[in-house]
Length: 598
Image (cartoon, rainbow, N blue to C red; front, side, top):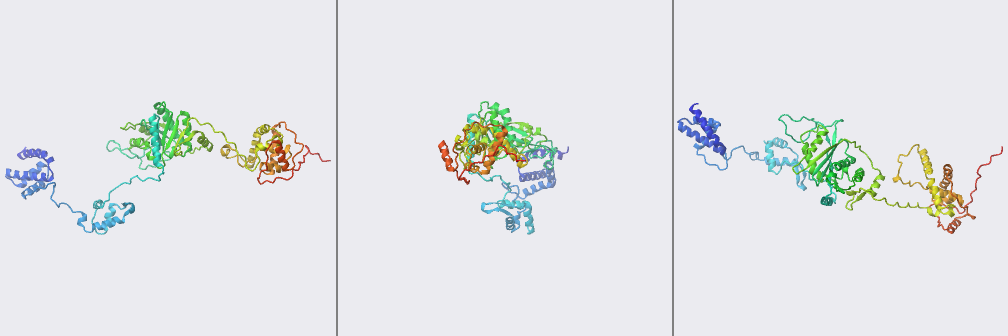
């Protein structure tokens, strides 16, 4: 190794130790000072000494010569600066007069928004602004346009999800009600859960947002488009978050997201975790959204909850969040966000992969999740009948005084059935109790009711057969009005028996009987004939009857006096029917017609 090589090695170590402790200008001046010193010691030119120093420091000779020149020229200290003032290209706004005014006009043309709310934005991109300025003779790139935008108070921003939809006037009050309920249940040691359905996920090589650590250059290959095919499977995760225990439970269903599926997830949670975690529980509080499979207006949700309450013996209290406030549900920001984080950056190739990802969700706050797969079929479109809903409303549901449509309880044991109210008498007719009198029918009241009960089935069968013949087929709606008789039916079986007995005992004309029952005389004629046919066909004997009175009433006044004397309060109703002034006696036909002479 020569002398120069040895010197270069020594200087290189020296320079390496000193370089991190100085700035660019100090480093340049130091190297220039070393070059001047080496030129004096070696009695050589400054250029040769600068080449030696540059070789040892690993910089160009021009840098060393520049430092030496600054020292020779009497360089003065520049506190806080590495370069002389005035260096660099001037800003576009200063180098080109009038640029700022034209820039403001261009931005004004592209500004959108309502100036009254002081929320505006520019719809032009930086390249659009630079292009319009260039069209007017100014040289301005996109970086210069960005500096001008920042100078006028603009900045790049993303849309902020802070605007809410229509707000219910009692929204805050409902939040307070839910929080009070949760506090009361937690203090009493009763379970409190937050439930919701997560977004449906497609199974297969589909893209998912996020990144995961993998060997460099070996990313997971997924489809370039996330369009599912007809045979693409998907899962509907329904989550249950135990607020008190900070535990999650997710049922990954492969069928439809319905109320039946949601309640089955609740049942699985109670069987696998809830019953063991709360062995002495008598109540369960469920907080959920106002829409979806657990909607506040969903009949099937309430029907399935009633079955769950009866099975578990729990009083299930439900509190729905107001509309458009689903993000306030605790399961959203305490469990579902962490499940999404676990799934990020990797496709869900199979249902089991998705379930395993949910089960692997843990947090530093102590959250742990359990995931199960539910392959049971949940057909969509199941309807709950009006009769079933009436039963639930009367005997199972208990509405809260504060917004009962959002807050209600499902009882495990139904309330006793209320006593049925007596059916009101149809208007425009004599009450049945007044007509069912021995003096008018010749039969005891209980005997007439027994005959009506025995004739009920044949009467209904005959009527149904007539309807079937008239329609040409069976009824589509077999039950109407919750099983109650149709309002169009004017006479029932008992009225048929009453009409027949008034006709047979007092020999009243059909027009007079029609006035008493509020129907047309033709209806009475048909009723008496049908009653006789049904009694004969069913072989139902009449109980013993009393003989007709010796003096049969022949006028309406005589009929009223006869009934009053017997103890029956009888009045002639005003129903549009005309009561005959005289009751003509009926001409009784012989049992068999005589044969004409041959």
